[in-house]
Image (cartoon, rainbow, N blue to C red; front, top):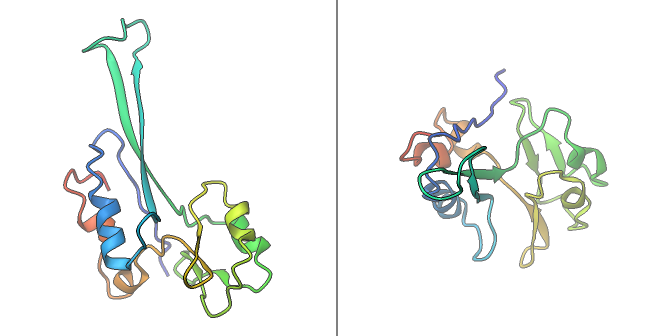
Length: 148
């Protein structure tokens, strides 16, 4: 079975937030919460540059679950709600999640959060509903710059 990953070419990402919006729309992510956060890094003066246009650099960094090979979040989950599927994606079984947030604290990327309404932890699922049908995750399909 294949192991899935999302690669992002930071030289192509324009910071348009299409991935963030597409993710929120397809997964019903609540207002104020994000499964993908796009960070703006810069503008930083280029080495030896003046720090004024055009001698500056800036890039955008989409942050989401990395679906780690050896995830800390899975190790600390007391109910085994966080688990690795056969396809290598890290998923959360909401029926087992008790909302303790140990996984959120253990995540080195800080991409898990507590859904206050359901009292369960949520994160990027890599659109398991789409990849199970052979489709691309919604954030990849909607990337206008084709950075993903």
